Image (cartoon, rainbow, N blue to C red):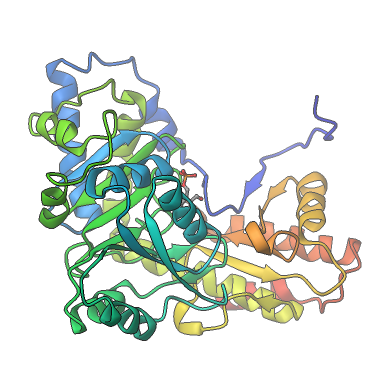
Length: 389
Ligand SMILES: Cc1ncc(COP(=O)(O)O)c(C=O)c1O
């Protein structure tokens, strides 16, 4: 039983996923369950599979699993790699570290380039590492585009350039879980082989769908990959997707929601959606700086438009602070993960977030800083409001 006081009014969720689900999407999902082998479903299937190519900016096929984002990552591994293969992972945060762990669990041998968890993947280091692999034993490079645990966005185009500069043929696999539909993402132009994402972030849906865009080279790799796979088999999925169907029961309700989400994104315009995220992120950073707290990401070029991690002053526990904000103000912030647990709290500004929601959340934080006697200056909300104009 929860011992939380009931809160009147709406709660505010400033999380980098799950993000708020707009009424229009909720309404679109309130439909009778479809016969997923029938013609009405077929139309929906063909339409969302095609539209997702626009979202990923690709001509490659996109597949959709009933799963969270991690499932699509597992699929990327088992469809392209074999036990004993070497992979290169750039460990820039908690989610990147998860993929390294997953690689090990599948019997892959990860070479790990660590970072300080405050800056993005260094293309120079990637190039140097790959240049040493004369035998081309490294079969894939794993990179997280938007590291949700640190608020650092990596430059995927530069990672591709680094790989090309040394002529290394490894597959480039990118975690776009918390970036897709919240910031510019270009599967084709950046030469990504496998892009992986989830529904509960920029697409403004509940959790439950995972997406994968798959290049021709990655599809070809399935022919030699020896990992066992069944549910995750791209081949099975792609064969049926051609006709708009799925090999296993699809999450039909979420697919209705997805169609609505894409319609909303197109109505707003992708560039406007991205600009809104950049603007919200800047407003949050202005508040954090006015409070005198640390924006965790050290490189302005890498500031995430989706989430800002905030360093807590010494002697103050970020997890306890987050709990206070939640219990007192009904505002959900995200916690520090992995080695940042207790050190940072994270403000999500991803998905369907407007000025007023953002300012409401920042107000709760400013009040909670005072209640918790965290050393800070007031004026963060005012700074954000000034910026938002
Ligand atoms: C960057 C990133 N990768 C992977 C994941 C894991 O995705 P899921 O929880 O949907 O499996 C998350 C979840 O927040 C994430 O932010």
